[in-house]
Image (cartoon, rainbow, N blue to C red; front, side, top):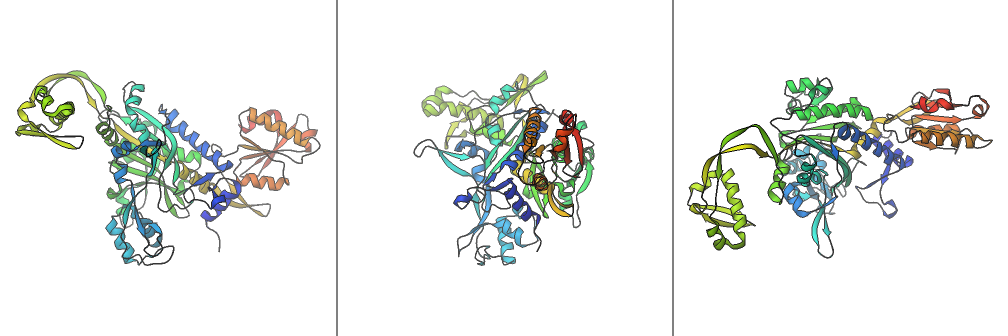
Amino acid sequence: MSKSLTEKLSELAKRRGFFFQSSEAYGGVAGFQTFGPEGAELKRNIENSWRETFSDSLGHREIEAPTIMPEPVFEASGHLDTFDDMIIECPECGTSSRADHLVEDNTDIEEAESFSHEQVEALIKEHNLECPSCGEDLSNVAVEDFNLMFETSIGPGSGQTGYLRPETAQGIFVEFPRLKEYARNQLPFGITQIGKAYRNEISPRKGLVRVRELTQAELEHFIDPEEDEPRLEKVEDVELKLYSREQQNAEDGEPQFMTVKEAVEEEVVESDWIAYYLGIAKQWYEEIGVDMERFRFRQHQNDELSHYASDCWDAESQVDGDWIEITGFAYRGCYDLKKHDQYSREDYKIFKEYDEPKTVEKNTVSPDMGYLGPEFGDKAGKIAEKLEEIAENEPEAFEADKVFVEVDGEEYSVPADKCNFSVEEVTENGEHILPHVVEPSFGIDRMVYTVLAHAYDEDEVDDEERTVMRFNEEVAPTEVAVFPLMDKEGLGEKAQEVADKLREEGFSVKYDDTGNIGKRYRRQDEVGTPVCVTIDYETLEDEPETVTVRDRDSTDQERVEISDLADYLA
């Protein structure tokens, strides 16, 4: 039986140092992968390319926040309540499985993640699904929630409860009050971050696809939703492959090809900002080697949308017939900043100055502190602040005899006549607004896996089968390999000299003098090195000195003068 691409890729990744399971000397732990020398360089090149495209060239700024944050951050963000997956535990052997994946793996159903617990339980019963470990019938076993957060303790003893971040985004949102100062309180502005995130996955699988420690590259673009618009003209002619909600629900629905401009005009993509970033991302995917024949943008179904998102599209790549989410493009509104504004002691709003002053009606209160102080003691100040919030958001509350407020989990009542509620005409020069957030969020590990899978190829050279990774030069782990034909008679010394010179010119260079030249070529083909340079006896004889340059994809060879080599390779 022939091996699948996944199996071939896994074997190659381990043999050539792209990635492999961590801690194998101690039996390994599922969901943790080590990037070997080739994989670490490939990953770094993809990260640097992302940084250039989504941060530097767009004028955004990058930060680096801690990977551990205190519990209140995730109470505010909603992760403690909503960051769950569906789990089902075998009553016979105790094996835990992710219930929606159990359905997807054993039926023709896709995207079971968007189903309710009751729907998944019904599907498990309908299809008589069994425990993947012992074969026990799971038809009558309850599906429950499992929170994916990694909990830890900050400080000695019981310390302070903290969590490893499940996404890099919260590190940006939490620091917004300071970040807006660096942006001179002017919208729009973008903050990027590349870093680790942690998710205690129920059933890690497929190498780099579902892991417990991952790298994310995220951009949070803060905008004024009433005024700021993207520069769509930059990408309006970029063609997108869009699998809309409507097409997914149609009996014979298929992805549609349309330009960014058409997608916006026909309202297939609801947000201009999302469409803008889909266009930029499409061009970047092509640059780093994603095969557009195995790629699409898929819109989230309504019951699939995150609690914070009004619209969301996933960039998906196909590997071995499976579609893998590699990026999420979400319009998060003001959800995150509003939550942190409510829960924290900082101000997450930005002052938006009007072109001309406006006269408006404003609800105000002037609490009688002579009453509040003796009546409520040290809670009086907080109660007064709450009354101001109620005046702004629920003015009808002051029509009753008493106004009820909640402070530190306790409810207090204040006589309405002690609140001094009124509606006044005031002249305002501006208003404080909560910015909205547009978020492209990239899974770097899955990007690496996609680039590996789409670069993998097999062909024949000189009647021999070879495996070759056809990486785009921008992300290839090594740009050029230098060989002496044989390590004697001065060939090795000359080869080292050439390798050193190319490194000084800024190329990533690998030197190899082990084994015959054919095997060395094959090794470099398997790690995707675009060009090999061989120093042979002709090099020592020619005047000026020349070397053999071999192309990875065509295997064609030509002689190039050493003095011209750097320019030729560039």
